[in-house]
Amino acid sequence: MSSHLCISTYKSPRHDDLKLELCFVGRNCSMVPAVLGTTYGCQARRLDLSYNNIRSLCGLERFPYLEELILDNNCLSDDVLWPFMPYLTTLSINKNLLCNTTKLLAQLHKSCPRLRYLSLLNNLACPDLFSLTSDLSDLDAFEKRYQDFRVLVLQHLPKLRYLNGRRVRRAEARAAKERPSEAAGEPQDTGEPQDTGEPQDTGGPQDTGGPQDTE
Image (tube, rainbow, N blue to C red; front, side):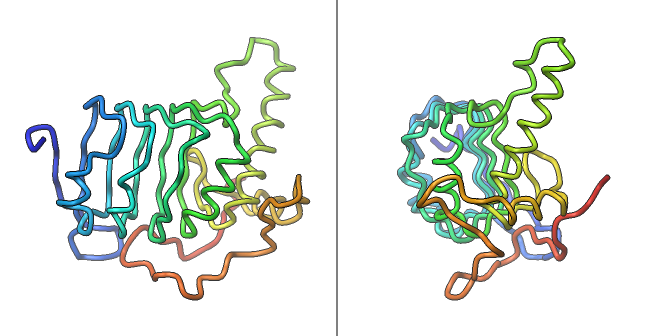
């Protein structure tokens, strides 16, 4: 195991303290290796498990202080159960098997209350530009669909600052607050979720301002 595991330290942008990063990439594992959690779980702040065959997130509960999680190019589906990750600010789940957008967002809303950065490109749950034809009318329809998608994500996750690598604009955040809930039982966010009783940030990525207008 140790010969396939990369362990490094890094400094967060706003703090001088060193943090532990684990990289276990391309090892064909179907779940989070138990030895990683038992050995490094309480110290790790960043975990990269890209390019595996992960179908279950069982074992992530051994990483109670995780701030960044990268799960690109795996086999996560709509049936995956997301553990509670109170410190997580960054989640990358590009190129998995996620299809149900609303279900995913509802789970992340409960499991990741401090999420600021989310990327879920190349999933059926996210509109895909590469599925378009050369017809310009298709492009116009895609842009509207993708913008509606961003608003839907922000409705469930109003603390996001970046979605799919693009900064959240004030107009998008405002549209998300004004958007009616699509179905009974979905989370409705009239503002930022309360942090009362939740752990405080310990040096992860921080944004001192709200969504920005870049246009």
